Length: 397
Image 1 (cartoon, rainbow, N blue to C red):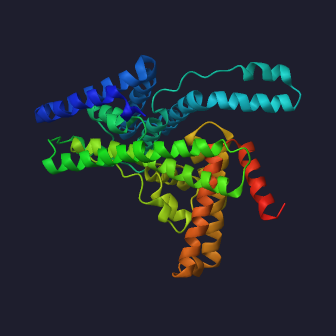
Image 2: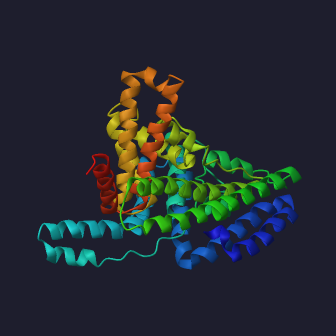
Image 3: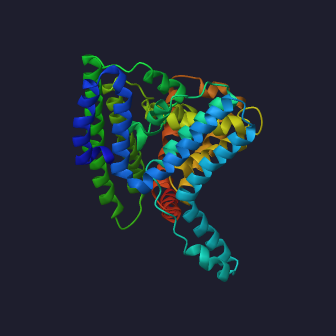
């Protein structure tokens, strides 16, 4: 985790006071320079080159859209952005999967070259900045928002160091206006941000990392049993929550110490009583991005709602990693959301009643989400073994 690196704390000890000491007209340039140093240190020149190229393309096309450039430029830019993400993050996974299929079809000569393909190391945060750039172009082209004309504003939007590595995913129309009049934050803002950073560190170091130790112990148990599998599902769920929410707290806190606001990412998701509510509380900057730029363009609630949910959630799963278990995790949530939508249409009272029904809804939602964490963290074969062991126990076998 980047925020636990000693270099980062030395960097922050210079970057934050330096920003406060800068005159107002220089704060933007200091912020951009600090973010560039941060990115250079953790990504290196090979990691910075792709984001610089894609940022220049996105900036130019955004300006072009506002001056009447043809729709083809917008499509080409989006294809380039998504293509770069696919090449760096998914080409090796795709080649390996295709090689396995060809081998199964007894076409091994064709599979040999694919199985040896190794993709270059993915640039730092390519998933996050790709999603932010696609969002920017979509908003300018489809919703007619004014583009970012100041290249320094666009640069800070692209590589803002608190949110660069792991989000939250920013919306340019919320973030960039804050750069128009940069100022020193008040004492209360700095203290509030510092408390948020400390809280995030506590979540990560004192809870998430401790849970990892417990998980490792349980994973060494020789046989899967319902108590072990259930404990792993619950522990993995809290481990990823405190890990990711801790990082988000630190990013939000650091931004706050600079007088800037970035999106909240978590809102007590395990209190949810439906999957729809869960996804409104879990990784909110990603879930709203998937909703606005995948689910709604596919047709949303208007046509093929179930299929749209499945496609959107499988893509959400693959966004987390290039492996079939992530796709299956997304499919699991898509299936759950589709089933829930059907219940909401047929029996709306079931999802609105209070009392014992509310407790039952919470148990169903939490159980569905928890089983999903097994799919998220373990190979499909391992989850199949876990499930089979639990079913055998339940049937008395």
